[in-house]
Length: 291
Length: 235
Image (cartoon, rainbow over all chains, first blue to last red; front, side):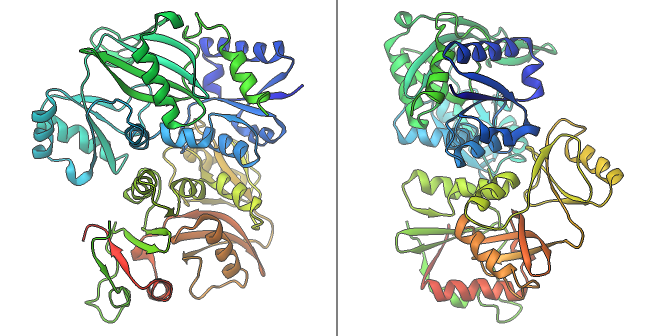
């Protein structure tokens, strides 16, 4: 029998949906004959007593979840998400570099340093890629700090604001669609697939609409209904990042499939597993039974 | 691609006031056999210096420091755990949201924390105030290291693992060990000393303007001895 450490914070366990998902994960570990414990940041050294670590805490190299991932990796304890996946996925520049290097289909994308954030450069990109442009601060998560610019003035305004948080930012062609595909990838293989239906009046999976926070709807999609190009592109994107757990967001437009981003620590609590009840069993097996 | 290789001893050596040292935000790339060394006053996450490392790594260029090492170095618990596994003498650390035993040294551990920045809490009441600030009222965790009687917290600059005019006998060896592990050309090192023993507390970036004349000459002299040419990015 092995022990799974599930690294969480107060925010994770205070959300009913996330707590329910955590309990499913614990149940899966127990069904497979293992034990599971929740580990909070102030108990971080308990990681060293676990046989595998599953991080369910927002990840970024700048926060304590990364310390947890790194602690596990330094002591050769299997961990999802591993530090390399966090480092790449939490930074859109690094992530798109990996996708480009591996010839994964993405919208037209440029990385801009502070000196590139000028009206002339904005106008040039608008002329080449059309209106609007999408600007992203590299550490964006849950669609925060992803904004559309419709003209060169707005490009400079948004770009300068994002530049306070990063020396480089991302400019990207806007791909119109009513929903995002999400392909869940574990160890380079399909884990699940779903559609995130984008809220009306928004282009993001989570947005402020009329002062209210609105979320996308989730529609789990069985494997036989996933278009082959979506599946293949999603798997290719996951493999371009590493061998861990990823949620790949894709859009289909005019017969082409584009990867919008690859997320480490993907959401699993919003019905993504409806058609894939073995998600947590596969994760637990990968962490505790792969040696 | 090497755009402009010149002997650098003349440029880096300070001769008179008109001589310019490295400018703010300037990044210098040095090529040595199969490695490219990137010298920057800031390699931290999402800085120009950091992206210079990421870009090289993606292009398959063997680059030092590695972008992962820079993140490891500047996040205190990771820095200390990694250094400890490498046999370096380090401070014991803990993570908390609220409680510490004073006296102690406190580091922020969140998106807004400045690498290497610390506050010393000598007594419990003061610690509460500091913690309220670094945790944004308990929202984020922090890292702390207890201080024992007679221990002092000191900071120095390291240039390729060397220190100029080290105040403590144990510092030169500690700096060498830290450089061997993290390969960061320029860094500030915070350590706790009690007599001859120096324990690593944290690492942080160091601005060129914060280097003393001796440290600037150390940088120029050290590079001049090790390499015979350098490349200035973008020139």
